[in-house]
Length: 68
Image (cartoon, rainbow, N blue to C red; front, top):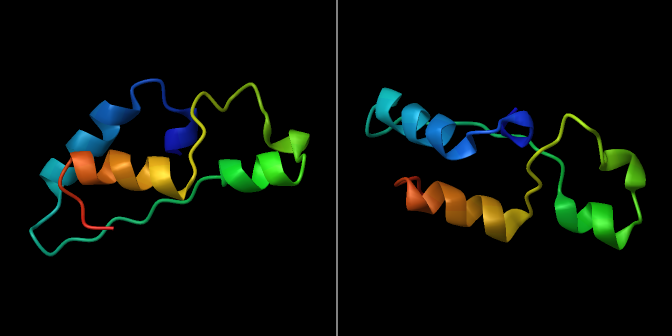
């Protein structure tokens, strides 16, 4: 639910520190590219404070040592 988290980098960093070297994390968020390309305005919710596409989510995870 990182799309609803104000301090998303803290959550990712904490998650990384809790996982073993071979640990896995599963993240599911709405695809912002799909939202824009399909005019899917229903994806814009007040609860969503972060929007990700494949590139931005990969960059965020790589920043904290995750292999994507």
